[in-house]
Length: 166
Image (cartoon, rainbow, N blue to C red; front, top):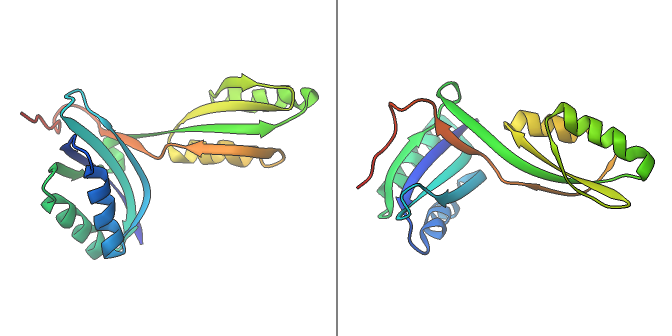
């Protein structure tokens, strides 16, 4: 089993995300991460999907998604030619005496303290999945009260593969 990241450009219409995720569900494909947002052209949405499977399944996913009516473009974002980022917000339980230790760990990862209360700290961290995973692992001695992750957002490096839609 291998992972692939697909970037899909679709019409910005109601139900398009549901139709794409429905295709995955009907065929029994797994979505490990999905993000969606409007592009610089408001009539289009960029969807980034991380999925896994063998070569045959991953090729089938790409072909099936490309056939959907709202899909304008789909391509694999290869790690060596792309930039992947994820956002995580982590709420960590800590006393006033432990707070500085949590803040120090966040600083090492260039995390931002976005909320502080008497018994917890909320940290925002961005980076690739490995960075976010490493940060969470370093918090192992603390109680993580809540964790929210966006999933991968990704773009191809450079301007050669930019897709221009009318």
